[in-house]
Image 1 (cartoon, helix red, strand yellow):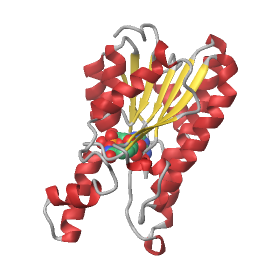
Image 2 (cartoon, helix red, strand yellow; image 1 turned 90 degrees about the horizontal axis):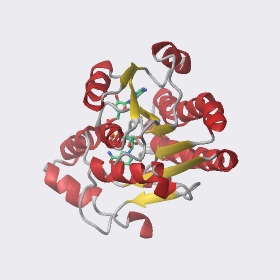
Image 3 (spheres, protein in one colour; image 1 turned 45 degrees about the vertical axis):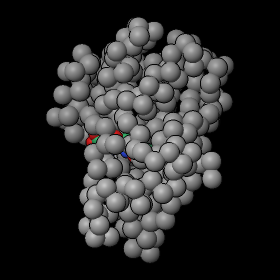
Length: 253
Ligand code: NAD
């Protein structure tokens, strides 16, 4: 559990759900964690739990790398977990263009800007790890999720380019592709779908969310964090440019 001693890990969206689980797991492996989240309160709470640092930052603001550098001037990330994200569900003809643009900013442009800021330091030190929290929606589409599916597919591309450019410098980059994980993001979707369809929350999970998966259960945030820690540890050093499904067989279809 101490293989990441001496490494600094930046976890975006680290205040909740999968990001929080990753922050805790990487801290347990010895990393110094920087929790970046637009929710200052939850970022501070997770930073306190991990003994790390909180940065309150909105990743949809393109000036965020400067705000981040001002908040933690000595930060040089060895590990980046690109995790911050959000969902909006609507048919394309009704999808608000400004929400489409914001989803791409937070889930694609911000990871690019972070890579741009931290890669020179990683190259200097000859070591770096990117774990991009993509989704089964980075590999498969679903209706009414045009921005999210587009953003996750784009993140897959960015991850592979980082893998190719970073390889000679000891930097790996991978995607993790979960199906539905039990987090606040999904709990909200369950509640919304239950209202829309006029059915109970359990039925939403069974009949709608788990329909495409072979294994009929939600994934737990800790299971995602475990895979992230594996990719960051010494065992993961030859895995790069990969996308690892954690989707209960969804993408086997
Ligand atoms: P969550 O809502 O629990 O947490 C997301 C965190 O990101 C929140 O703390 C939020 O404040 C932060 N965030 C959102 N927009 C931000 C912004 N502009 N700037 C800074 N921080 C911002 O969600 P989660 O379920 O833990 O999702 C985390 C990631 O995992 C997302 O990228 C999501 O697409 C992905 N994912 C989730 C699931 C799932 O079923 N929950 C499945 C596959 C992939």
